[in-house]
Image 1 (cartoon, helix red, strand yellow):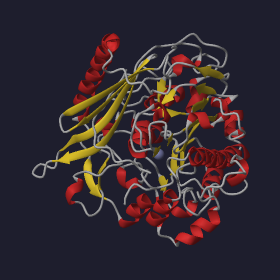
Image 2: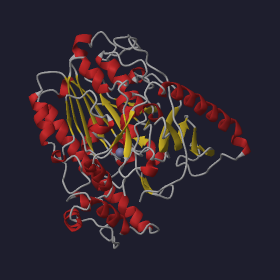
Image 3: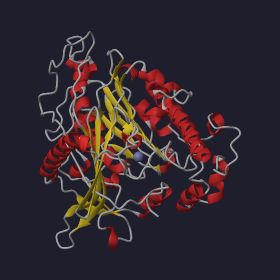
Image 4: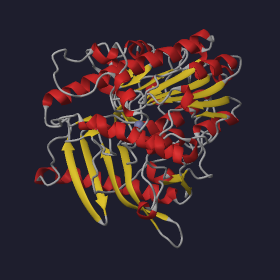
Length: 505
Ligand SMILES: [Zn+2]
């Protein structure tokens, strides 16, 4: 169930990859076939396809490659064995729209301002949202300008053209008929993606695919509805997907409420059952991934495709007292899978913490195109061949915007933000001028359960993290002035989609 927490604020930034410096720079010491080596010619990389697949709401630890012992992800695991896997990839927001927009722009959420929450909610009958500023350049803009054909197939909800996710795409397919809305009665259907890949196999392209398959309610289709659950479970959580959707008759808001009304929130057996149904959804998503990779192979383009598979955020199963994801930034919300399959590059596992915000500068460097100078992420290319770099990672979810009725300008009313180093996590909740801090030492408390913000022995660490966050805020506030964006009113169709996902009541 979505919590409504009346807190607080945030925002952020990191090292910038200066425009023009990344392409073809020799970079780190090379191994044969590495993107920086003479063996991988610029012309060759210039014709690589780029495919980014986002599986919404997918915890890293649901996958075998990240330690899951049940067979939830045979396709992902096989892909990971021939890819660069980032063991500690972190989302920049706890919810879908800001996280995906940070992926697509390499700007932090308080800079690009695209959020799940509406602006000036008090007077809005419909959700009014911010559309990405015309001044921002997206990964699709950059790759389209490099001569690649561009297409996106998305699961709608919070990843819709109205918010600016269509920027730079020749084709932005958010048609429900493509079956990407995996949390509704339709199952994932890759037919339209497969057709597009086949039609464009002869030319370089950028393809973005997004699906909500693991998103709640967790109703995996057979056989995954029973694959991982305890056969002795005697609770009331629905598991028959067909029967459940037949019973709600298209009232998706009621469906969402109905599902969670069957959950006994204080019963450990129900919590465990939800986890296991979620693992079934994970396997369902893995099947979808397999179908997409098969389409690339069938078209004969797999070997010249730079492939990125990731998720926008994780999912909570009461680690901190709640379910699903409401923008919070604990480990279970921000740890996501991230693999890069780079043509000709050996597989590797990278332990250095990285962010989804680093994906765009990395892709730009790998295919030899210049990204916007404002990118706040850093290229991960130095890590592909064994480099290491300790750095802080930031997260920020805006929970409420204040809109000035006279000027229409927006400011942050409530948010949550985080900064993580190798050892520490600081979470700051800001609301109406008040800040509540939580501090965790992940060396002894990896699950972030024991708040040390008021422990005297942690004062030095707290001070450093506060300073890092303040510096980050200052960088983002400066940059945000260039990307004001515009306020829009969502269509009724978009609102219906959001009701189906539990975001609009
Ligand atoms: Zn999401």
